[in-house]
Image (cartoon, rainbow, N blue to C red; front, side):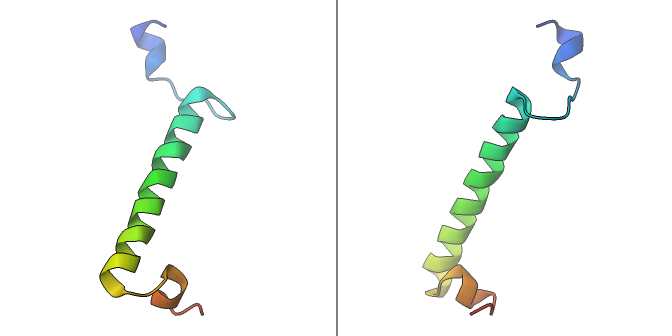
Length: 50
C-alpha cells in the first residue's frame, strides 16, 4: 500500500473500520470496568437506568 492511499478513508466493512470498532469496544469495556470498581455499582445502576 502506498503512502498516498494509506490516509484515504473508505466507508463500509473494511480493515480500518474493524480496527476502530475494536479499539472503541476496548475503551468502552475498560471504562465500564473502571466505573464498577470506583463506584461499587454496575454501569446501569450508576447511570440510573435500573
